[in-house]
Length: 160
Image (cartoon, rainbow, N blue to C red; front, top):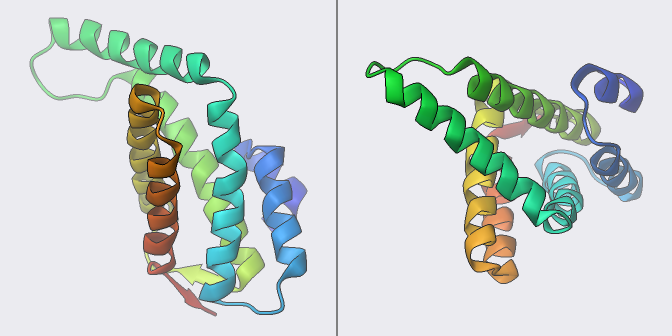
């Protein structure tokens, strides 16, 4: 995953996010966790307009997930992964992991925890935050949540 093209090809990372990270990386005069914060913020800031531009699309995705889970739980009482919903979350985890790896590579940092676990955390937090935004439309709250996410993520990395 040493070049932008490889990251995009491997995980389907959105070109808008890659471009934002690469653009920010080109302007940095430092590395390490400080640089990581800038890159994470750049990528997340590029992601947010993709959400706000298509709220109905995201609402439909939530509806589809909930409908799938309602159908599954209607016939099962034991906890087991739903293959459709689980695959969708795995795809999101993979994309976020590629983003995290790209930011770490460009900043000269290393994640202290398995990147897949960090990605699952990010997906969980962002999915919940987007649902909240769909409910209340409060952009200011989202800015706080996403900035706090970046702050938490920087505690999970060290300079190499």
